[in-house]
Each structure stands twice: as structure tokens, then as C-alpha cells.
Length: 90
Image (tube, rainbow, N blue to C red; front, side, top):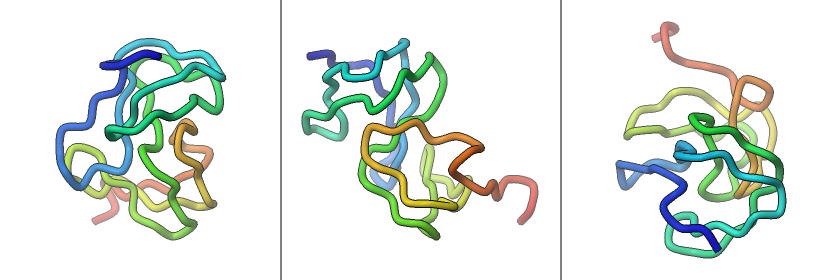
């Protein structure tokens, strides 16, 4: 099991940033609980810290950065394929 591969710096964050590459099936500690990476995720990309419902705000570093455009499961990569961005639109 791998710890310290995910960075979340604010208590309201529902996504974390990968500090290293992770492979599908790899066990991680996410938000204090064991989880499994649902896909390969590269360094610097976001990972869901919890299950996110379609329409839910995506919070990174305490800031709303987007809205889930589909349900996203804990351990899935969070990127432009499953969120609609808010940055620059406010």
C-alpha cells in the first residue's frame, strides 16, 4: 500500500493531486482510507478522494475548479473528460 502519493491541502478538497505515477489496481491511502486506483494516473493529475455525483463541484486547494459532468468514483482520474471547468468563467 502506498501512502503520500496524493496531495490534498484543504479540508474541503474532494480531489487530490498525484505526487507520483500510479497504476490501475494500486492500493493507496486517500483521505485517510484505503482505496484502489481505478486507472493509471500520471504525476500531477487529479484523483477523486470520494465518490462525486454529476453536478457536484470539484474542489482543489480549497477552490471550486469545475463541475462533474458525470458520476466519478473514488480513485478515478479527474480531468477534462469528466468535469466542466469553471476557472476563467467566473
